[in-house]
Image 1 (tube, rainbow, N blue to C red):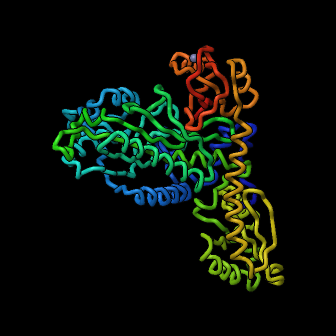
Image 2: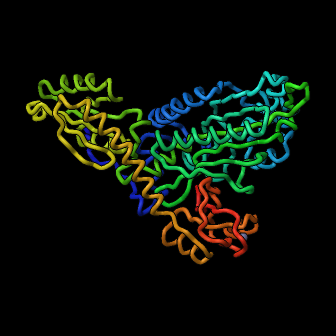
Image 3: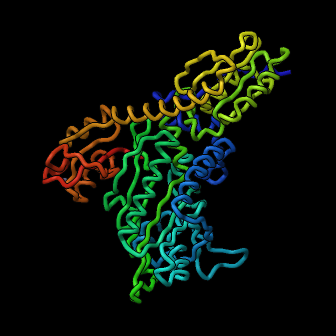
Length: 478
Ligand SMILES: [Zn+2]
């Protein structure tokens, strides 16, 4: 018989090598496995359960705001993708082509969807005729493929899961309100459910979506001081509608062109969750999104009454939390380590001594704090702790972002900040793409957003010294 493996799952510490730490966590927390095609990933049940929790919360909000789910085909004919010039230019470098079906070469190449604007455009042109048909508020949950050169699980992969909303409106004002509404819903998903604070703002013209008039974005700061775009919402104006002929007759009988939006969030959010909350013991999952909130670990479970009590506690807690029990014959030490690695918010230990005292021992994943709790107070205490953990994770992430945000008035200050306190840099910008490019080339930091909440940290562009137009958040980004 082989000796039961008792070792603690080793992961690289994040201070030593953040990228390796990330890779270790996604593997050892059983979130993903690598697939045979380079850059594609198998999302394992635990990783998928987290995605399902995000999806359930967001899907409800999407529906509550009047949107309907729809499913579009995976394949797009090349001619359709060519219809909107900016769009094809933006996506051409990273699309995957299908050139053959069975033994036959196709007369027209097909694209595996990198995004579905053109499919929606074609469909909307067929079904929208009158002002009575508007607004059209559709959303799709799907997979997309983008042929990325460098890939990392969740952050940048060949194929990923997402939702893409596509809407048509009678006026530009209505469409712009929609982009703001959806950005706010994304912010709510990040802040309320994932406990990830976000900056809300607009992308510069260079950073906006291919084919959009403007792109709204939410941006978050990861533990290593790099930024991650966590959601975007685009106002497409009438560009796609003109290319696809999406027109309607208004109340006065005049022919008008619709104004469109599109918006999306992806499985990248799981990458954000890992990099915002994780620590050197593994993943930390915020309670509101955690597939399992409490894990019961019986101690000396072979002793009479322990397992019975453990199962009874599971029943008792079912109404206040998502609770599970590990009654396998693995050692408690292995189990502690495993569920810390998986980031389960609360661990509940119950053994013969606890039963004698009519108590259990709860341990918080976020702080490591361990506390005895009388059994008759368990429901109240668990509810209270899950809230406290959720709030603590958000507060901690927000404090981290604030600590890692530096104001720069000159390029020297900008460069120093990137070295000494990597994170967001607040700096004024004149609005010229030349300055934006110069900063990117000199520092590899990019403009993340022009925040809705503008501050006036200086009168001059950080780069050229000319009159400043906007405050911009800059950062190195994923
Ligand atoms: Zn400038």
